[in-house]
Image (cartoon, rainbow, N blue to C red):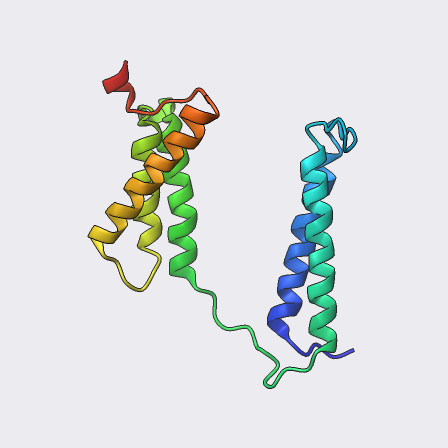
Length: 162
């Protein structure tokens, strides 16, 4: 069988791998049932859906003819590094890193850092637009997680809030 779309083929395999990993990881938790969901129910269902989506995409890549075979291009290393780095910076700033003497900077600072570092992954970087986006994301996250869901984690830097 000939691969007619390399992009779809490898994307489908990636979805299947992630789906199987989620579903397999969910089996270590109590699954429950639809009426009484356990902590493993959502990751199991998500894993199953991702796997089915991956199967469909992979099947389609083998059946649907494309003009040029949709070859896979070069890896975009710069965006990949900045997006992964943005998530690492967010995690470190949110909770701090006591071993290295980095205090918890809280949700607001962490979201601003995440937004600015992730924005460096793109072709264009406009400080004003990124600052507005960061402010909207920070306010929305504060409203959703702290006010509405009442989650307990640092919002402001530890040296300010005590």
